Image 1 (cartoon, rainbow, N blue to C red):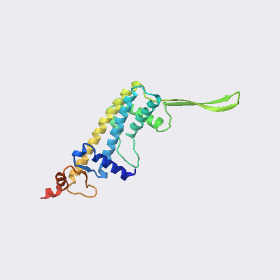
Image 2: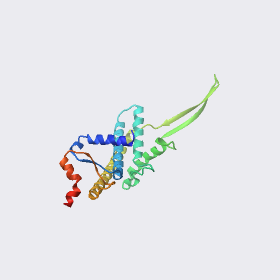
Image 3: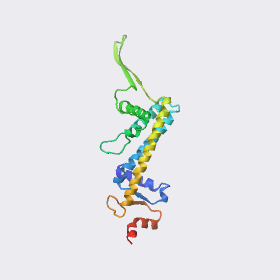
Image 4: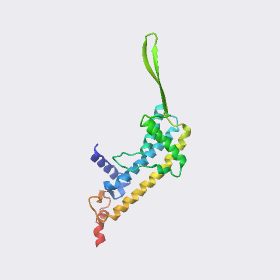
Length: 223
């Protein structure tokens, strides 16, 4: 689906949500929503990290442990990195200015992300050695590689990573709510002066009289 199709799908999903059916719901202009959407995405990524960590406390097959381990590192790292083109907000290192212990755990995760999972760098989590072999009977030769690779967190580490994620979830929610308050303040402040950048689009209408009142609030104020 292209961007327009995705937006239509989201509009439909929100419009038909059980909570939305009881509200007047407006689409927030694009230039206002970017930070709010970004922090909401961070919250979902951290919640997925926590679910994966909790699952890793249970017994799983190696492929499942590897998948969960990789998921945690990739999604966690995503919360602290961004694309130079999107310039979306992200979590910063100053989140840990009052917690050296959590900062150390964070740096361990980011090191795994940069040097082990996302890129093939120098890391203690993967070590390989190549061997030259000759089969005397056939005189065939080949190269054999031995590789030791980490595929999960140690069980005793998991509570520390869960503590880290819970700590950051609280910060992300606070940022999300703060940005949301600024959006609401901007909408209310500029309601009397609608333009192409501030105009609100009504997505659903649960009460036509109330909708008319809200949409014509400027006229009512000037009476």
